[in-house]
Length: 531
Image 1 (cartoon, rainbow, N blue to C red):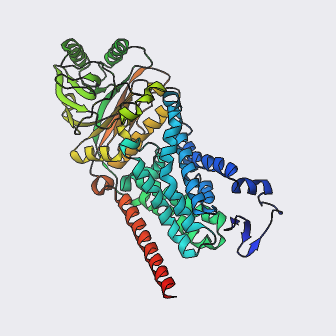
Image 2 (tube, rainbow, N blue to C red; image 1 turned 90 degrees about the vertical axis):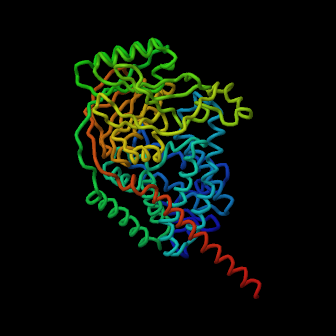
Image 3 (tube, helix red, strand yellow; image 1 turned 120 degrees about the vertical axis):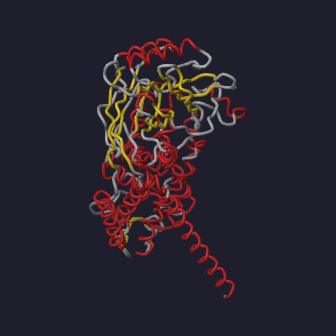
């Protein structure tokens, strides 16, 4: 069954049925899909559906079918303008659904952001219609299995720019708990997973709507299945290289910086005698620069001596001799700060700074936007941990764990363990904590380096070098300290070695398609002049 170019429902090539018979849409449904008042909400809902594949629902399998309604809607658009609108509204629905937990902080501004970022899917809606509208040939259907996913990947690439909010909610990230998908991530990163998922959705949409596309659609599904199976069976895996015992400290929901620090100290002392080699605190766990506060530095140094391990804390404050406020990972040993410090490089728009504050500063009056911009660091840092035999730790702060390139660079520089220090306490009762913690599994699988995700209020978790969970998670319902024997690994993953080849392949594919389309248009114009 399909929608013809004039909007009528067809049972197959050359036959149009008006609404009787089992399985055919009712006249009311047809009217809703041709009416802008009905089609608009349908596009928003279709775009929002894939959000259920992410935590907290974590219906990972839904990702492989969730785009089908959106694709069918854009395909059935009577005009290019309508297809562009379907792309925009669906994109707005997706962004709003994936980031709905920002509503208490940004209020109505989240609607503005969703509408603006939704515009990125406008070309994708046009691409879907160009390839699948009407009765496309088998060759065009086969090409769509590569071009539609490539177009989606370009949207993900552009919106991953940190100034547009970063790569939160990349479709491939919904597969964080699926071992075969994690194996694919080690080959091509989260981008390869997104390509695979959109290709499967495109093939299913073809099976539903284009009878003549049955052969290329089934062939496409088989290629995806065989490729995923081959990766699971034969893709290289990291070599075990021992373990390191790490303690994560999660104070829980505590009001006030000083009580939170005191609770962190108490929980850290409970780790004494348990053989931990490194203790990790969450983001903004310390509110004063240690070089300007020798008393706080001495307290943490004494704590390190009591436990017998270095502490990786996170300072949210002003540094001596530097203007502005930084968020910094600081390593503290038994004699105080070791001198290793990483200043957060990628900041959360509106949460940690307001872009174009002179223009958008009014956002502080309608939500919990940053009242003062944080300062950016300039380089990534590896920290050798003395209490762990010089173990090289690569720190990331907060949503930096969403950026594949940052963890990949740390792994290439020689990091043995990745550590993300985070705080999602503002969104404690939302999907955000679980979504954030899940990203560590992807980063670990991509790089073959285990990753510890330590937070103030949950969810804290650890994943091994294949993205597998290590130990239990610390949820948002409690404060606690937990010890993890984290497996280490040797070797360089294909993704760490070759980088974003899936992205470059998508670019080349779209470039070839655009070039061919341009050549056809040029030939048509020349033929028209000749006549």
